[in-house]
Length: 149
Image (cartoon, rainbow, N blue to C red; front, side, top):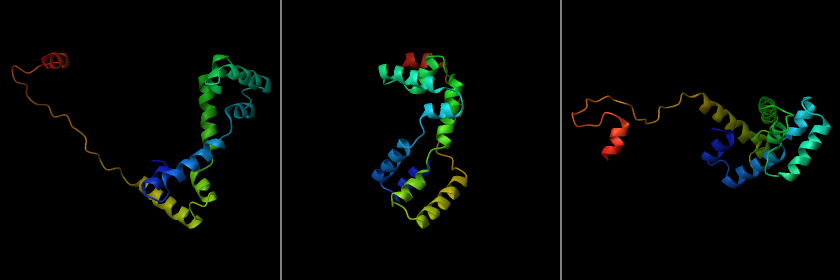
C-alpha cells in the first residue's frame, strides 16, 4: 500500500487532501520528452515532431507516438517512465508543504508505515483445493459441469 493510501486508511488525511496532494504530484512530473532529451534519446527536433503529431492526435501519449514514429522503442519509453517515477515528488513532502501534516506527524506516520510494511502479511481467507472422491454421476470435466447445469 502506498503511503498516501495508508494515511487515508488511518484517517490521518481526508480523501480530498490526498487527491489534492496527488494532483500536485502529477502536475510536477517531468515530461517524458524532457527526460528523453536529457538522456540523449531524442533531439529537440524529434520532440518538436512528436508534439506536432500529438496536436493531431491529442489522446495519444507522447511515448506511444514516439514509438509509432520509430524514434523510441517500448523499452526506451519504459526506462523513461521509471526515471520519471524516480523523480516524482514524495507525497509526504507535498502533504507537509500543504500544511496537512506537521514534520513531527510526518516522521511518526512514516515510522509507523515502515513498521507496517515490514510485518509479515497475514494470510487472507482463501479457498484451498481439497480433492474429493467423485460419485459415479458427478461430471468429470468443467465442460460436463457447465452442461450439467
